Length: 150
Image (cartoon, rainbow, N blue to C red; front, side, top):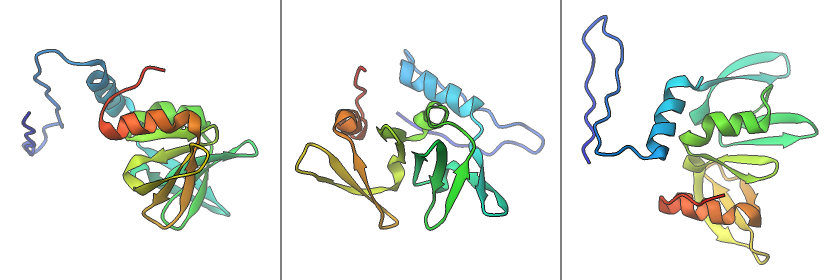
């Protein structure tokens, strides 16, 4: 497979063209999510309202009916529900790792095995989060590039 990136001429809009023998469902859902997703989030911290790029988020956590976005060293409250964030950012390498956490796979440095079948994800900012047993299989398959049926 080749990937070609070209700069458009002035006043031309960005265009993505995909040529393939048979597009698989993952490719189609990724392209649709890319086209329709609002990849910026509004974060709230004390008296500040901040625009966050999804690529800066290490993980999302739901706690006491509130959702938080954890960035490198800052934490912001997000007004979205966790399932909404999972739907929007799933195609961008975010995955559910417990009932209350969605992790950005790009921010995982390495994984270690826990005694009870769980995994511990060591993030690039030094934080550690647990991957519940229920989600370990999906994580491993995503890391290997294969999808698992739910």
